Length: 420
Image 1: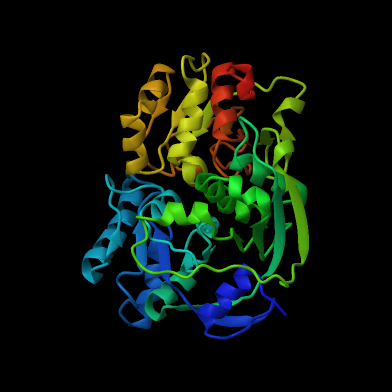
Image 2 (image 1 turned 180 degrees about the horizontal axis):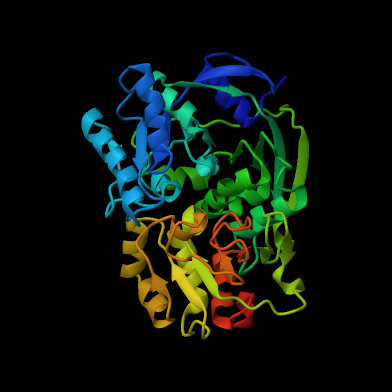
């Protein structure tokens, strides 16, 4: 019996020839990621073991959630991480001014390679499946133990195959693809399952599209999302990853628990209404205007350079509507710098947007965009749960950078074609 991409990856890292769904295995990990929120509790578990870190070069520490520090508690959390880095000589630590939102930063820095297996104490660690890796979020306890042992355990997940056909139309992006999928299968449709993307349509997707899609695999309940290795992957990793790697492809006779087909040609801009990512609607089908108070463009889902290009394309020569706040957050220092060099920041400022240093900030209701009762936000982030971005009586609508920018201009949820 053949294996899926995820099964073959797990077998490789467990040192066995074959695995099957439901099997409990122990795998060597290629990397462990933690942030300023998840690292302190992981450190407590690590200290109990009484061993040094398994590899100083394979632990990635990124203070991105409450940094630059918003209060004393967040400053103390960040200091715990900083002190540990100094003590242990951790090689990959990204201080404020050199950091970025973790799931934007790591691919950009070439820290994840095709065929590798990594874990992160953050649920959106599934992002790196876009690079043909197996990556998944774990609890701080598992991350702390793995820091000492270099290993962790898994139950091998079943795999859903998502076949993509055609090519995305103008104003449609990877965010619309993943919202469409979640709208179809639900927030628990892939619970503890791998989501493997395949089909001729994959070749038309940029790496930014793929990273966005895999980032939100967890919003469907997925253990991971994964793309095949192809010329797009190869081109992205060239010059970034400076070590050898071995990509993984699914066997022709691999077994899938479910199959879904998405016709990219027919896809339209999608928005997820409160309070679940599965509550999706096509923007064109919205009958009554939905007025908004805030727009967030950024996050680990859509804070990449290509996302800022998309937003700027819509915002250029326009102004944000009166009484609407539009906050743009580049996903990393490199993204910020490139956006500045290419004139994107000027476009945002001329449109009356606020531009922030890289941070997760408003996505998790941390800071830099908290809402009051009764306010609505169109956001390129990944979750719209009740109270996610502020008061429990505020509302978050998930959308692409194109839709977010158009909505900022119109003061209501809107399509880009309405302003361009």
